[in-house]
Image (cartoon, rainbow, N blue to C red; front, side, top):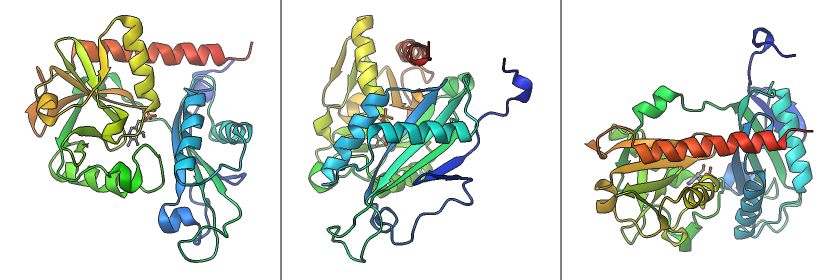
Length: 305
Ligand SMILES: Cc1ncc(COP(=O)(O)O)c(C=O)c1O
């Protein structure tokens, strides 16, 4: 039986095309198109007690992202899941642990130039790292958000529905939120509608009903978002995918963000102005509890008999 005394938790280990090393030793070729152009797709998984939470949803989205880049993933789902599990185990992940898993499939290295016609072999990179899940205090403290001027990319330019290695739109928005003294940015689209945060979906609660922007606002369809909408339905909490304007976001009783590893995080202020009471709201915390319980149940169900 495991004792806490001998357990050191999860380290960083990186698997590049089957070779697992420390982060210092992990390298990809300089001509890899993921490095040169952001020509790659990726997923971030929450590895929880041995299980990859919402594994199928993430693998479905990986393939959907690839299709949007005219790319077909060469590795099979079984190979990808095996690479992830082997890497997390090499990082020290045990049955009681949480880990962050980043899976990157790049178009690979080829001749210089934009044309990818002669790029024969994709590269698969898995990063396993400590999960850094928010503590109860982090949740109580909540996040300060800023509605930044930078727009989320147009779906007609580079559809945010694809999770690609091109994240400069989000990188710059996050930096601008930090410059404004906030923890994360919430971005609008060209129509002035709320889209999402830099690595999370966004929700507003008003008078007991939840609203989250629809996919045609130009967002990544979060796996956590899908689960939250289902949990709300089960719990009888009215929840709709509907256009959300910045005024409605500012006037909400509660606002929260969601993403795979962090789960649900309350937003306590927007542009320095308190959301509701300025503390995490009761519905946000109730939904968070249901979300955490659903992940525990999923991990339990995935245990070998
Ligand atoms: C832009 C963006 N939106 C939303 C999400 C949330 O997606 P998920 O719940 O599948 O982690 C992410 C995840 O990292 C993201 O990068």
